[in-house]
Length: 264
Image (tube, rainbow, N blue to C red):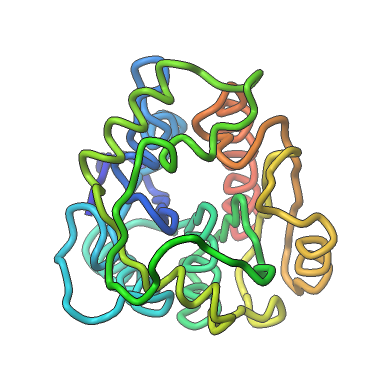
């Protein structure tokens, strides 16, 4: 588990990374000398980020990695934080495929101390996909081209951030588990029911996010039965690593603060 924390903060944020790269590149790549996780910490939150089994600095496993194995990893981290850290509450945030992980966790293992769910860049129902890679193997080899593939909004890119991200992604995750991709292609990935989510939920994504279908995410949002907000901001799929990262941090911080105040 990666963390930035102090005993002075009463609220924590657990970050769930995407399908290919782990927490270090996704949330700890420097943006103007501070990583996204660091900006959340400066906003007054303890920040925790876990690498699912088979990713990054985690244990490499022989068995297939899939969505539910990632959910179990997050549960272990959250259980530890709630038991040991003594925080008043936590928020769980997932980016991209990590939003599936976060959503299922909050659906299956709800605790009143989980004050917010943040679904960022969330593709609720994947379309039928054809992926040009061998899905019979347990791991795939990652490349510079793939690591750069989320940075398609040229006017929103920060060049040195992309260079740092790609370098760190291939250093920490030269290969990644194939299991999660196989679930998407085979259409066997579990889909969370919006009605099963019991904590306040923020849905947020870039206006030009190619991974998000507005009508599909709109249906998901309409079916939520909890306190909720929906924001579309300037950028693509990786807004937290683009010029709009401060806007994203502001939206997240204000949403969590509202939930803190409403629960008092």
